[in-house]
Length: 310
Ligand SMILES: Nc1ncnc2c1ncn2[C@@H]1O[C@H](COP(=O)(O)OP(=O)(O)OP(=O)(O)O)[C@@H](O)[C@H]1O
Image (cartoon, rainbow, N blue to C red):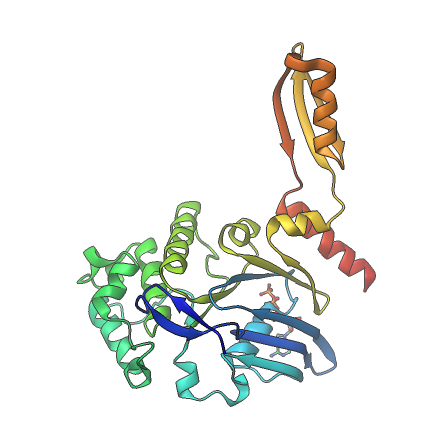
C-alpha cells in the first residue's frame, strides 16, 4: 500500500496509510416508519478533506451524520468510517472521532485547563505510536487560542472563548475525523468569523477530515473543500462552490458605466461579451463588474430542480 507523509500536529514525518477513504458511503438508505428519508446516498471523504453537507430542513443531514457517528442504525447500505462499520464501532474506534456539540454548558466551575485535562484522560488508553492521545493539554489550549484563559472558569469565558473550548473538547483526542453539526447556529457575525478562522487554523495545522452540516452557504463556501447538496433523499450535487455554479446553467451578470450611464447585461458567455464591449467602446467603459451566480443562487436552483423532479 502506498503511504503519505503527514506533517502537522501528529508530528513531522509520521506515516498514515494513503488513499483509504476516511468515509465511504454507498447506497445508504434510511426509513423512519413508512417515510424514506435517505434514498441511496453515495459519497466518500479523503484524509484531510473538509466537506460541507447542505440541504433544506428535513433533508436528512443530521440523520446521515448520526449514522456515521454510530448513533443511529441505517435501514440499508454500505457505510465505513475509518474502515469500520459504525454499527460495530467499539470504544477504540470512537476515540478516533471528534464531535463538536453545541456549547458546553455544564461544569461552569471548572477551569479551562483542568476540564481539558479531565476530558483528555478518556483518550489516554487509545493512543498509538502514530497518534499519541490525548493531545498534550497545553499544546491543545494553544492550538485553540485559549492560553491566556487556561485558568479561567468556564462560566467566565466570553461567547467566542466558549466556542474555542467546545472545539478543544471535540479535538482533545486528536480525532482523525471531526463532525460539526450546524456549528455556528445562533452566532453573531463576529463569533461566526472567529469560529471559521479557528477551523481554518486547525485544518492547516492538523490532518483532520471534517464533515460539517450547515444552512449557512457562506460558511460552506469558506470552510469546505467540497460541498454536497442533499435533497429529496439523494446527493444531488457535489463539488467546490465554483464547480457547483458551473453545473448550473446560470447566466453571469455584467455591469458597467459608459458616459455616465449605468448598464446591466446577463449572458452565459461573460468573456466573449466583455471582449466585445471593450472592442466597441474601449476606454469609455468604467466600473466594470462581472458577477457569477452566487452559491446561494446555485443552491436554490439545484434544490428546486430536485424538488420538481421528485
Ligand atoms: N427519530 C425519528 N423518527 C421519525 N422521523 C425522524 C426521526 N428523526 C428524524 N426524522 C425525520 O427525518 C427527516 C430528516 O431529519 P434530519 O433531522 O436528519 O434532517 P436535517 O437535514 O438535519 O434537517 P434540519 O436542517 O432541519 O436540521 C425529517 O423529516 C425528520 O422529521
